[in-house]
Length: 302
Ligand SMILES: CC/C=C\C/C=C\C/C=C\C=C\CC(=O)SCCNC(=O)CCNC(=O)[C@H](O)C(C)(C)COP(=O)(O)OP(=O)(O)OC[C@H]1O[C@@H](n2cnc3c(N)ncnc32)[C@H](O)[C@@H]1OP(=O)(O)O
Image 1: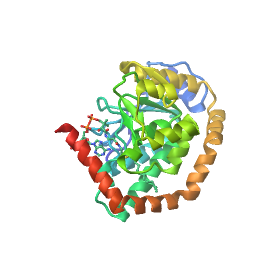
Image 2: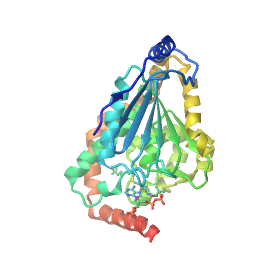
Image 3: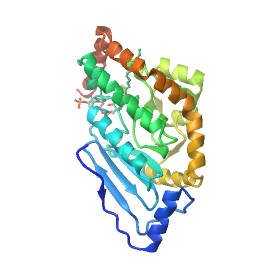
């Protein structure tokens, strides 16, 4: 990542230090509390992170136009940012959002899977796994503030968070449409979706590669709440306060208990999954599907 965390915090009063202590200890603290904030910012080309140490909330803003697609740089920045936040005692919660108008994330960058050899596929898939694993197994409270369309890998970010708030715009879509692209959602992401939607709904969604409009996503439980677009981030911040009212240790143990089976299965099969992906994605037939899909995406504009 090009940049490093810059510590721009200004310790201006005893009030701010007691709020920071509140954030560290995981005790309930009434916020938004705008006074005397401590802010740490980190910016890379694809991702910006702003941590407010006084509230314990970090906002990770995806800023890779045109569509926040997940290329290697994006995945690397994401992993480094997550590691830093996870180690930061001032950080208890993470909000994911996008600075790109109308798009949360278009998912994996198809160019990383098209016309590349097995070595690249291996490195790329490990990075994709790592993104999911870091978010899904995070100790932080994670909230996806989905302020635009969120297909495939974009939906992965939302699904692996603890709570999903989406902009109430029927033109924004979310879902796992891998089958449409000619590829297959990995087992760990399928398991993640089953936990959220149940088996039957997941099976239909995956086989039909369904992208749901925001209202339909709410109906099936793929997102938890719809709010007007301009309120997505503020609602995420308010929601965070509710999750922060639970002591960190008991919430974290509960989260890891709920997610353990999926994580254990992922860890035991991680290398096989990478090999499967590398074999699968480099097959001529899959490359042909990806090429056709890419051409369709480009043609849309013409
Ligand atoms: C045996 C099994 C073993 C292992 C598992 C195997 C396989 C699993 C493999 C993969 C899992 C993959 C998950 C994925 O994430 S695949 C990516 C799927 N993503 C999509 O289908 C989204 C496609 N994009 C869109 O639908 C739209 O772009 C949009 C709704 C997000 C935004 O629409 P806009 O109208 O605002 O923008 P566009 O004009 O469509 O796009 C602008 C620009 O960006 C390019 N682009 C869009 N999406 C991608 C992408 N995902 N990757 C790369 N490039 C993308 C698009 O072509 C335009 O480019 P140009 O400006 O025309 O050059």
